[in-house]
Length: 150
Image: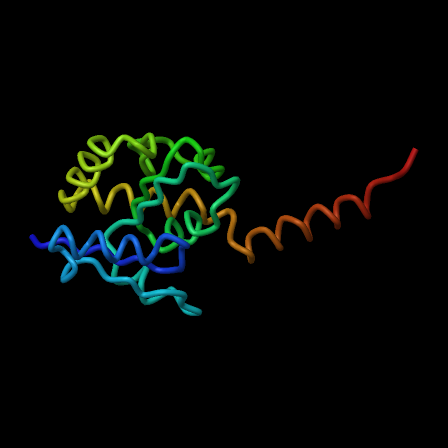
């Protein structure tokens, strides 16, 4: 299996990363897509989503990837980590633990593991979908409006 890395978005270090890919002679397998207004095709084409961040209070991209049914690998410094039970619906690794991240990525080569984690990820975030949240908010308002005040 030949793996490809697709980097979507922009980072101030993008040029450095492109140069590093060339130095390592892997530029044919590392693709820098830049900023995309519609990321759904990228999620659909992906086998996993990896965000080993050193700090991100709450990465919406983790929710998006989980909603797309992708197994995610992120770090303890990502706020979305509160939704992840490592090994069950995603994976939590130290952002600088390259060996741990690589080992986790290798475990996702097993289609059964990848599909199980992806399904669990999607199930985890389904209650956070806009329609579900709206329904709960409306139910709360209805309950508050019908309660008697003391």
